[in-house]
Length: 446
Image (cartoon, rainbow, N blue to C red; front, side, top):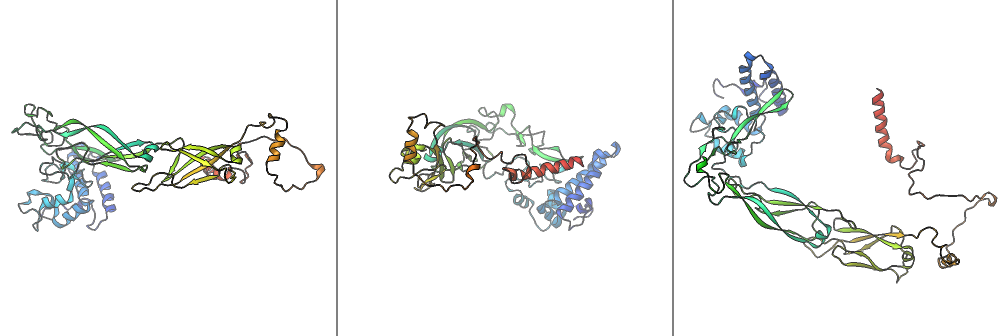
């Protein structure tokens, strides 16, 4: 640290071994006490200078890389005017900054008051025009693409028209006509960025860099007469292109399909970004998917459940009919029974294999009274045809047997309802809610 240079640690009133938490706490305390809005008008100019020093100290010391540079070389590490050799020890400032802020990032230091460190044009590196530097690749464009389960089962290829920005071929992305020279932007003084105030807490504000709106962050522009006649100085033009999207069979929800280099072009990028489609699977009316397996319900009537099924029970995702024959072995299909059909699920990507299909049997019973609406002896014939399985009788006193009336209900939700008995139906599920309600009532009473 050179003579006469103010120590940033002293500015924040901390030791050189202070932690990040201690630095942040000291900054908030110092900024609050020295904020220009907190002092009389005649002291505001001095307070403004002090506030900028505090903010600058925090910006440097809160970042590990810039703090290391400051500890090694003091403020000379951030001042190009320190001489041709740069900071002591022969360290090249451009090399340091290129490594620290490769790709134009600022690592959270975009809020440097007063346009950045002393002597550094455009504030922090990457804030000004990108002359002489190019980002390795443009930003990707992420889009969600809804797709039906049938399309995921069979695969899909679709073509669509994309309208995007492409580099103007008339001026090769310069924005001006040939041999014309751009003018420096007066708004940002060629830096490509402007400073603006941003609140960071109650009574606290900081300054941050934003791209200059006059020159679109380039630091320069062409006079109207010198602009490219085709792109009007914008450097890019709109162009339509037919793109093809291929969805492999067996693809899943959330998978991404990349169209390389098909995003908007930017003259400052080495190559365009990618268009990325994220698959969103639409709900299906019949099938439910889990991984490579499928599940569906099939309906059989009471006769089929007892005597067997021999028909097509389901239309698959590719239009094929799925047929069952349970008559040969006399199999009885029971309600909610699950039938597993191997190899009839979803295709597995990059293979010929498929998952499994699970069919849940739903037995459709006849309407009440259907048997008595037939011939008088129909009930006796049905009873005679059904197996006479003996049911163990219930022991009771014959003279105390009562024949009772009944009604059919859908579930047990009414069992013990309103009794406060924890064994009642649904009480265990509601226990947490009741506790929360009780706690809320207690809080209200307090």
